[in-house]
Amino acid sequence: VERTVVATDAYRGAHAGDGTLVVSHRWEAPDEPDGTGTQLRALQAHLEAHPHISQVWIDYACMPQGERRTPAEGVLFKHMLRNVNLLYVGMPTLLLVDISYLSRFWTQFEAWLSMRECRSSGLLAAGASRQRCVMVCLHNATMGNEDVKLRQMWADVTPTAAHELLSKPDVTVTNQSDKVTQLEKIATLDDEVRAALGESGAASLRADGVSAAALPLGFEWDVLAAAGYAPAEVLARAITLVSHADADVREGVGACGRCRGRGARGGASSARPQSRALPGQ
View 1: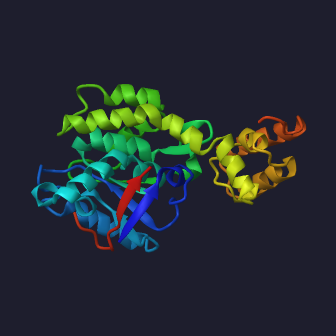
View 2: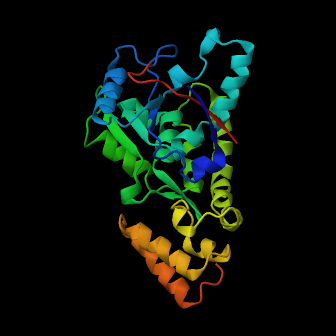
View 3: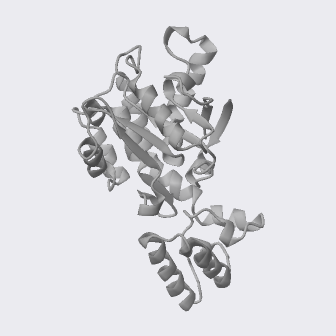
């Protein structure tokens, strides 16, 4: 299965509930990510516990690898590598955590992305009811230790701080060019998210006839008002969301009420079919 993942769709959460799972894991050897099959067994157990998952994306199976790549596949590989962040920021993610996971660039980058949510105000820490990542500890890592440490390391880290932390020399990577490329991505990611969920994006969707209630959660109240949605529509959206609200959403509902009071101005291989998602912009 091949799919194209568009940046705007990923930032707006279009793939968050479409049955796709992304796997974050550490390669245990340069040419073999899972020599003992431990990662595969953990993935199989997760799929058995979540039968709604219909597609799995994992780098080893879904990106052309090593000397087997044709010239055309080499081009495809580089394109996917540059845009792979879209998968981890926009889809449910299974983190297969061992002790070394916490020191590697790619795994820490993926974990940080999986703990974000995209909002009009940028790339923020995901609210309690909107967590997309699940952690499973492997090998010498134990639940209650490495998983807790990983969340403490990355759950509340801003894009600016993430760039600084991931730039440190003790965050290791096999190919230094990968680190350079993805650090450049982090530098622009917050602005890309703001653009996708900003006033012009909301206005365009409004022009296409999309109601406020049908918009992705990431669109914030002031943005909807500035885009021309009526106060009653924004309030109806709040009522729709409050049925599954966490503290963050309830705060947003309060902000909506304040806005209305002002007149609303301003504003390995898997046990399931693999999905070769082609992230693109």
